[in-house]
Length: 476
Image 1 (cartoon, rainbow, N blue to C red):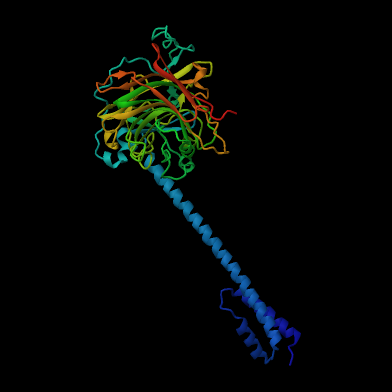
Image 2: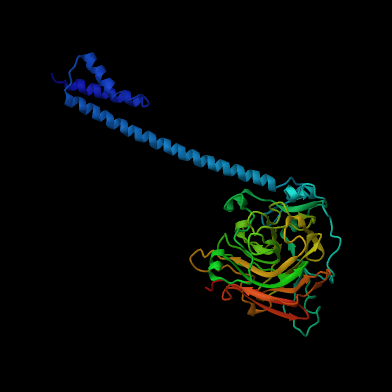
């Protein structure tokens, strides 16, 4: 007996409706089929039953795959959402650690917010070695030297060996300052700290790496120029250096605003005090000026410090972005913009930095501004003295487009361009075992690729030991 068309049509329609309304129910195709057949006393041919069953089976598969796709989408979305919430929570916790409660805050013209934080509340005391540390508010003594005006505008003529030591540097004296000073100052008993923003941390590859140099060595190793190492390392230098036993170093450097090609590259000029080998045990204290878009979010020239006791692997950081350096000065903010800067064929603005060992490693900026100190307990090889001093420039070359970077070092000009065009370090000195500042006996130079960045030394009565350095990177 055949199935009437309207009966089959009615049954299929009701089966589809029931299935759509109850997606989660256990497959009901065969039960629905039996129920209809029993209720109507029908005898549906095998071929018709197969058609109905196969259609129902295809529907089940289609709905099943849709369900699986939705579940996978929800799982993926939940995972990314959780990862996003987890990273955001990690960022907020890190911000709370870095941004201490302030007495007052000052808005800098360049957009920075400078927080005036009580000296005893600064990030340094988060370090386990410094929990019970007693702050030393001043050094007991300083190196023996003539205290001159070391933050000034140099005359726009090159000092010569025929001139007296005061003729060319005493003209047009002006003070280099930090931009935030125009809107206020921090009260005594506090220190100025550049406030870290959420965007600052998010620019880093991870929260853990924020404020740190890459773990592969960023210190020039003068005794090895391996082209393969240069390409892997990505850091290039043009430096002068001295080897021996040193208890400090000093130099005056002019300040520029070099162009940086990629946001994750930087250009800096600094002093390094080093101890240990160029392996995992390297100790380093560093200070100078830098342009680093990734760290600061702009291309301003900024004062900075750095330290590490394990070759940049786990310890140390820039400025006050981790515990370590103890600041006592209420006028200078680490990481804040400095101005004005030197001009090509114009006035040359320079700053002086002195670092010396007196129990701890102290740092002085300019004319008598003692900024603070690195406790000797932070280090293994720098507990007593340094074995290598370096002065000069460093850039990161990411070779983003397969070619050498066009990031400039110093002024972006080669050393042979000379005064008012090239960048320089002058009055290079070391602190000896008698606590005297003097010119190093032997100064050597080092650069990985002199066709990109170079260095040339000299000496005269005005500048003592000096050198010009820098370059444009890849020549366009």
